[in-house]
Length: 394
Picture 1 (tube, rainbow, N blue to C red):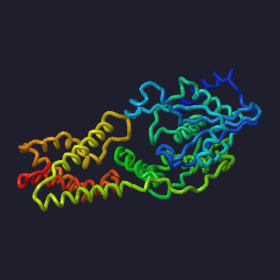
Picture 2 (tube, helix red, strand yellow):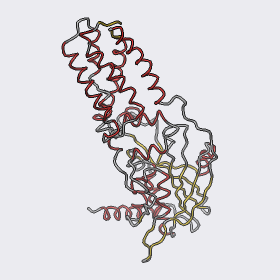
Picture 3 (cartoon, one colour):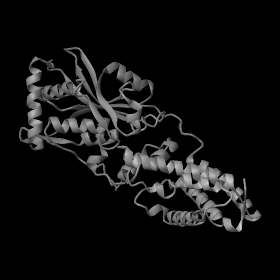
Picture 4 (cartoon, rainbow, N blue to C red):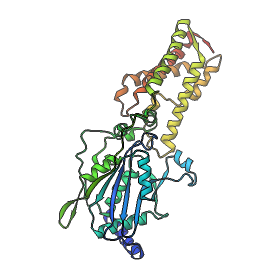
């Protein structure tokens, strides 16, 4: 069945089920709300989108919110770890929703849709159907299926793809990761976590259509959107109103950034490495700590790649977070080291040297703050490789 036929069938079924359903008044409006970012939490740093229904005759003021999740759902934390994030469409009173965002100093922009009474009813019926418990759940995806893209997709579904977006807001080639970075200057550790855990899937250059995985670009996309009606092209948005304008706040980001933290780590262990080199003795505890922890990180990245639905495949961070460090580094505890150990750390040193030499040219945008840490691992790998000419201290 073609996509258009499926959509037509779905809308037909909705029209049947809505015969006994609620009917909007002639004064009803449907609008898209764009909520500004909040740097208090990583998940709120990108903003939010929702749909508002206002019907003063029926005394309905509702928010259709595709950003709802339930901590009490079965196996929530296991599903979260596996990337099977169940989100759902939830209904909320508009005034409580609005007031909560105002209390958090988050801007609210409303774009009222240019719809006639039949089109408003059609969209309302779809949202009502979608909000039913048996229909409300969906698998969340960071960039392809979230609170913003659901609104775009709902409009495309209800109006059968008859919406033409204006992508003039695309000024340069940016990847999904580049677009994320715009919103993360006050979330340096969250930015680092994203850059470590998510692979090349977010290093694809985004099209104008895909920019709309971010709420701000839903607003921009709708602002210039046109649709065919009665033989002419008409704007999709009838009006735009700023319901609340946020006030500037001081930066909330941590003063201890990853760059500072990794430089401090490098200087501390680098000083120990310099002393080890001068004395001709290697501090075994340093290598046990660094390589075992790094190996555990590597196993975590492999878990995310192969055993979850997160966008974690093809992760080049595995070139520094080599999983085999754990348990190979545990052999450093032996008084008589296995012969393969020297060859292993020579190979590690070669890989790390190559990684650092072309750091900015990999298909994945590796976080620059990790360079000092990768350099530290290189230095320690060389010291372990030279072990036969040295003695160790614990």
